[in-house]
Image (tube, rainbow, N blue to C red; front, top):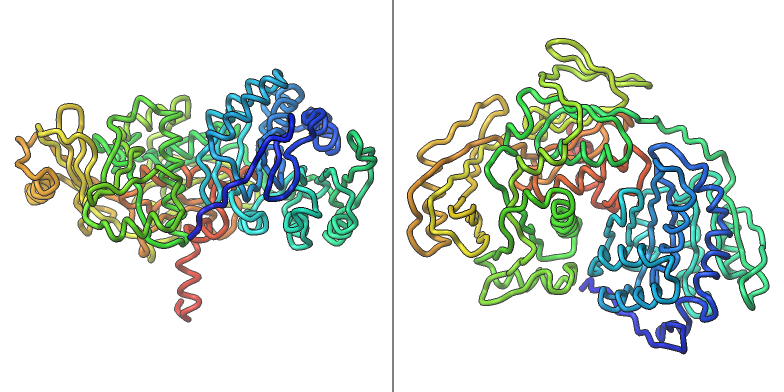
Length: 586
């Protein structure tokens, strides 16, 4: 079981108290003033925000999200002080997260008491997810992003790969909550701090000081807040100038849903984007009239279960926020394996009420049908586009050169996202192949929602879409619809409908890129820092593309990835070569 423990809270006058830890969430006299004194001023954030620039966001790490008051204060200050193009990323660990209803009431009280935080409190209340074990990333605005690490702090921080500019060490009292101040955790804080990065905390407890000194921080005492005489701040030695390559221009090969999601995320991060495709946007599998957003389920807690859960929930929020007009139908049910569905729910990985087992079906109200072409058009709006065939990629320490049939393109970085054609360009020919898929449209009857059992049917306006087949193919094939596939889709549709399908209207066949282990490829190619791949998405591309695109742009810009390390390794391009190496194969 992986369920998160619930907090036990009560009111103590104006203060909110944790009964588990015998401590308050923030100072009764003036919690906002305390936050500003200890964490904002303690990290010199006004001055540092004012001079922050570049595509890398300013990253704040926090131990103990609590009510979110520290986040609200930091976001409010960032909005006041930071230059227009700067971005803020706030990462926070929380082992006993409040549920949305509890937090909503607390944020309402915060707004009443400190009206200047009202806009940020409203954004947080609207975006706050139902907690689930692992990492969850949300956007409060285009410039302010928040990542929760839900679970024990040492565990969730140990599974991340970012370097913070500043830390808010705000666990409950060390005497009441020693795990949040352990030597191991403070060492992790240090390894997740960039050179010259800082921390601030309300406590000057001896064990905390010794742990931070042992982790290589240089410490300083400052005047405390209220009745506390002292507080603690510190810096990590070193020069804050990064040796990582600065990426300003990204060239994306492939204008399907994966390339479009990457283009959207790259532009939001401040990169110049050019897309190259040999045909045009949505010409491959992303050109189908509709595609499915449906969970893929695992009956145990493992990297696959967490990845596909996170990908689905991220995708539903992403398309809902950025391409709402591309969503065509909502709600779905998975049939056929009730015992397995019970085991899925028993893992505790899924948020409460996200999945519901009824009458042998697993209901997924967040499932949806998406128009890929409409989504792509919205996501790449404003991007430079060039039609062409990329034949080779050459990289130096300073730039990338793409050779096309009609010339060359220079760029700081390249992302290979061209479906089955990616295999040669990304050097993964041994590990990826093509498969052919066909969808068919019939004139009815229209199901009330999406139904799946191996294949799927869904309402497409007043029509019925069914599919998709899964047949072996070659990357060079030019797929065409055939009668055998249409017949197979009709049989599968009628089995789900329990009645005859209507007249056939149309069909479309396309190629998918599929890997040996049926999981996507997303990551750097040979740790170059300039060449990346996002491919091998198989039949789950609409679901997995958004979170994988966010992951890759985070890697390029020094941001916090939405994927914890076990999952980023799980989808890394080099995983197949590493497996062959371990087996003694070339």
